[in-house]
Length: 244
Image (tube, rainbow, N blue to C red; front, side):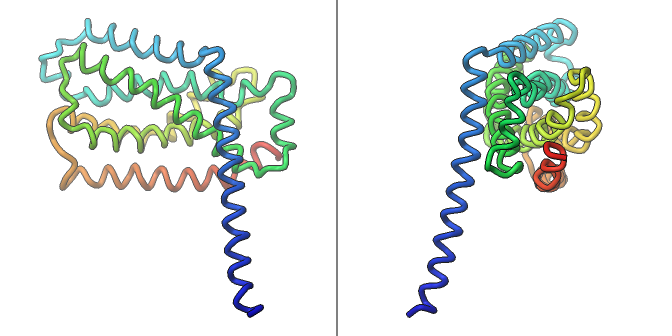
């Protein structure tokens, strides 16, 4: 009887630890989202930037031209990546006031939990920006994307998580630098090249009516591999970045 109870107790402890981890991650994410909703500084700036860039480029290119069809996905992800930098830059920067970051690091929770919570909050904010940007893009550039909605959603989710993981990690790395607004994009964009190339290629194909099949599948695998590898690396290295 005692031997049979041991596995059950271990399973309960694992379940309790996992539940605690989920609650801690959600607490950090909810805190960041509430903080942003109070001011809306990063969201308003990012949405305004995205819309302005899309409107300006709509005057520069003919929506019916073949040239636009060839780089439509690149234009869309260019807007996503630059607008996302405005959100990601404030991820850890908002914690510098009143030594809030030191308090979070000293709190009885793993650094990986803090990273995941902030990454989820950033991911939610980036997705909200993209939900606004994609319809605006379709309106100004006469692009029909609803026919490939689920495929587009898959590419956007995978590409946005790649940007979120890299951006959140380097936001923690550059939080104490004076030139962090300049250093964050400088560090993030070179590492994002494989993910951005994959997302741009897939998005361009989908906007032109080409489904994800055959040769396109390799780009999905690149995105998935990029997300998994850099998520694991960030979780392993964030403790060194925050604590030293």
